[in-house]
Amino acid sequence: MLTQSVPTSNPGGFDTLNLISPIRRAVSEEKYTQPTPIQTEAIPHLLEGRDLLGCAQTGTGKTAAFALPILQRLAEYKDKPRPKEVRSLILTPTRELALQIEESFRVYGRYLKFNQTVVFGGVNPKAQIRALSRGVDILVATPGRLLDLFNQGCLRMDKVDVFVLDEADQMLDMGFLPDVKKIFNAIPETRQTVLFSATLPAEIVRLTHKFLNDPIKVSVAPPASTVDKVDQRIMFVDRENKSALLESILEDESVYRVLVFTRTKHGANRVAKNLSKKRIRTEAIHGNKSQSARMQALNKFRSGHVRVLVATDVASRGLDVDGITHVINYELPKEAESYVHRIGRTARAGATGIALSFCDAEERGYLRGIERTINQSVTVDKDHAYHSDAIASKSSHRSGGNGNRGRRGAGAGAGRRNSNGFSAKSGSRRSSQRTNPSAPGGYAKKTRSFHAKPRSSR
Ligand code: AMP
Image 1 (cartoon, helix red, strand yellow):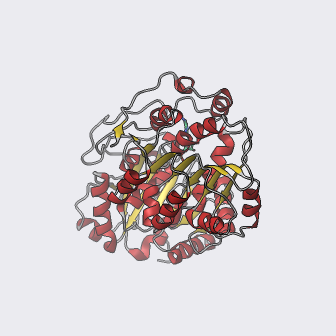
Image 2 (tube, rainbow, N blue to C red; image 1 turned 30 degrees about the vertical axis):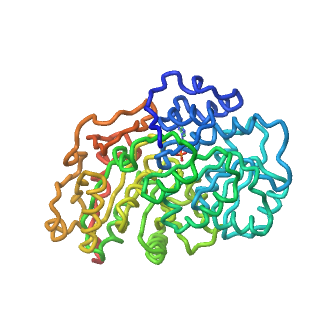
Image 3 (cartoon, rainbow, N blue to C red; image 1 turned 60 degrees about the vertical axis):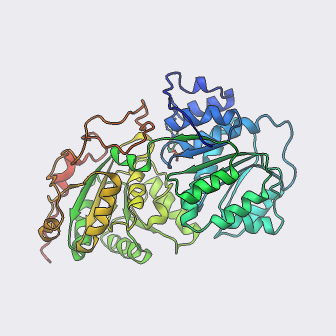
């Protein structure tokens, strides 16, 4: 049976969470003044050693929610792990997430001396095998490579004391479930288990019943609530005009760190090539690129060397880049959940952001699915030269013109936020009316400046 944790506010900040001083110091150097709701909820239970089912997605601060208690638990060990031994194991679906989580452990654990490493596929395993041979306190891994290395005898899982299964629903989508079950069976029965999932399909609930021991359930606002922080616009445009519309938007320099999503790898390459031809610094990232090419592209984007990153949905989860001003859905995703994840890339850690979605005649069905999922209709922006009345008229939408009008079905002020701007737990889908003139490249102010001008060649 699941015990549902009751959400509490935490006016005392991190000091009330009983964390040891090396951890508190690292957190305060990160300028985290208030724990996020998932941290307030989860950390006390995890410090008590409880199993936990967390319903939260990336962007809510869930990494620290599990990493801080793990670091504290590891600090109680008096000895170092033996060769090949793993003390805490964090399983996550993608390489990007694995790298991010490992980096977070480094940051939060900088005043504690732990051995840690990360393993994932697509790269030569030699360095990973070497790191594992010494024994590790913290191992962050993707399932396939972990099992490969385990089957080759490069690590032991019989001393795993804490196991975190992150993004369990994505593991399911990616067909990792059989691997995950093998891993559950390879770790000791007495361990602390933490499972995070943005949604709870039946298979995940079954997994929870089978492998978690009397877990406490903690949830923060469901994924769709991310949309509250994002200023969303839909732009009806014929498919052949999408490229020109994108270029016209990018004429505005305040649109300066832009994540563009396509549905296919081929599409991502094509968009990136077109923009590069126009001398707009662009990189593409998708599943066909090697791990090192993906990392390079991401680093260039993070450091500001490239302005536009074109990505398929492989990058929509977990990608943590500060200051993304705009997410542009060049193509709408088939799955409404992906839309939520995509636009969430511009609303990290309580920040706000802008999401522009291009919708052609074929994509109206996807748009309807998205609006059902987020429980609101997205304001139409027809204030651009490529607006298609024909497509718009077949969708019953309210036009947003050039301002931040309220969204249909919006209820002002719904939803509780803590001082971080993170939305607090909610059992139902919420929507709120919001204007965002102060966001980077604030849409209200900038709309006019990226009106598309029909080009003379057209
Ligand atoms: P995560 O959901 O773990 O991917 O975290 C999303 C972002 O929130 C990361 O950039 C973290 O550095 C940031 N973050 C995590 N906890 C806090 C906090 N208590 N206050 C402010 N930012 C935070």
